[in-house]
Image (cartoon, rainbow, N blue to C red):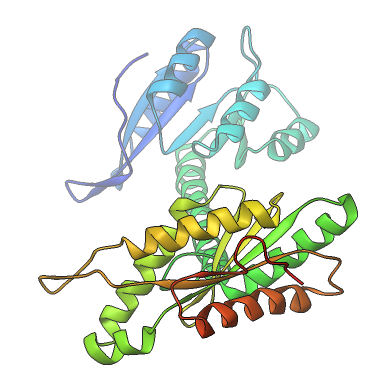
Length: 323
C-alpha cells in the first residue's frame, strides 16, 4: 500500500484535502486514478492504494478515509462483498469504479450501499472529481441529519435539566410495563419520590442551586438502580422509578436504600456543602390496575402518606399492605 496514515478532510494551503482509498488489483487503473486526481488544483487528494485482500483487511483496521474507490472485479473476496462490509461498518462512502458490469450490476451496487457507480470506460477527471466531492458531501449531510435526529429523539425522551427520562417517556414506558406484567403475570412496582422542602431550597439558595440539587438527586437515583429499571422526572421535584420484575418487598428495600443514599449527599454550593437533602418515597405494586393512572395514583397516595408522617421516609412501611 502506498502512502500510509489516515488523513481527515481539511483545508491545507488554501486547498481542501481529501483522503481517498483506492482498491483495485490492476496497477494500471490505480495509476490512472492517481494521475487523474493529481490534476486537481482545488483539492489535494491523499491517495491510499490497496492491491489485494490482505492489504484491504489491514486498511479497514488502520485507516478511515473520506471516500473509498472500489473495483468490483477483484481476485479473492469480491468487490461486492467488500462494499457490503464497508457499508455495514458505516466507515465512509463508496464509489464503485469498474471495468465490467452493466446496468443491473450498477443497481445491485447502489442497493448494497454504493454512493456512485462509474464505468472505467467513462473515467475522466471531471466525472470522478465531481463524484468524490458529491458523495462526500452527501455522506456528511446524512451524518449531520442522523446526529440531529438523535438529538431530537433524546430531547423528546429525556428531561433537559436532569438528563433522565421525561414525564412523557415515563408514562409510555410505564404503560408498556403494565401491559407486559398483566399479560405474563410478572411482578412490577413503582417508586414515587419527592424532594422534601424543595421550595425552601429555592427560596434560601436560589433556583440555580435548586437545579443543582435536582440534578444531583436524579443522578444518584439513576446510579443506584438497575439498567433494566426506568428512572425519570415526573414533574417539578418529583421522580418516578419503574421497577420491572420487582415485588413490593424488593421495591421497599430499594426505596429505603435510595432514601438513605440521598440523605448522605453532600452537594457543594458556593464554597459550602449542602447536607440536609432528603426525600419521601411512596411504593406501589401492580395489582390488576385498570390503567396506568390508577397504578401511579397508588404510589402517589403512599408518597403523600410519607410526607404526612414526617417526610424522609418510605411508605408503606414493611408489613403494611399496598392497596
